[in-house]
Length: 281
Image 1 (tube, rainbow, N blue to C red):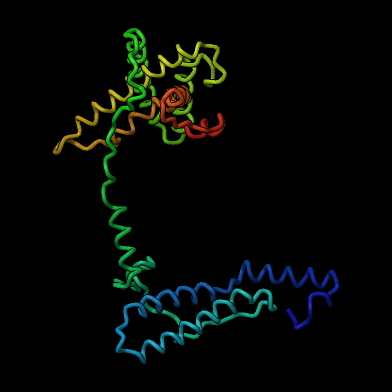
Image 2 (cartoon, rainbow, N blue to C red; image 1 turned 30 degrees about the vertical axis):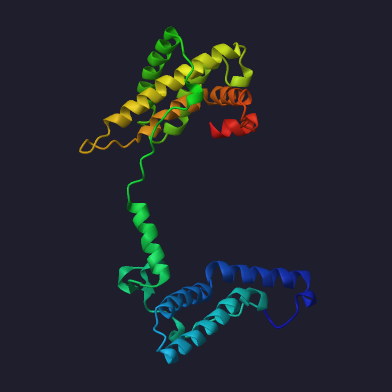
């Protein structure tokens, strides 16, 4: 853009200049800001590992980093100042990058700086097997459940597992079909789409919710016991088998838990809205 203030342009001239700037930014981008930022990061990594007795080299690096900062902000401000192109001098450009910047191997080196050590530590956690989550039952849900109710949900739980196995086979539709499976069993429990819409007696719902919890957690604990050293590792951790209880009966279980806590000397109420609970479960 010429050295002319925007307020001096006519509407047509201003529109034309802005369109030119858009085309330049879109099809001829100035990569100076990215080059300056990457070069500064690489230089800082080397600076962090430089011995104190190499003061001359450290001072030289500091000057280069300051210059790179100036170039970076010049590149950011360039579109506001007429679209002037900013170039990074070759002597300021990094040729090698620390491994934590994840560049190609040919232009990377193994950094021993604090940044490199943090990166390596995080990577080691990512690659390690996740800690096993132990499955155990909440004492609040230890109420006795009638045998017919337990048998009913044992049968339904086995049926659910077969249906969910089929639902998850198709990668493209698995999320939708899995939701449909959970919806089916929620409607069996509540005789409605959601707990608050049910016409059933709460005590009847609570008994069946406890039966679902019992059946589901017994299955998960059995799977946990089967995971012994040397046994073939399952893709699904034992805690993953608890999902059915909370996806289907979660709203009822939370209300039952809240009610029991309210009757205790030391209360711990659960405050939430139905919509938030739906999102969680």
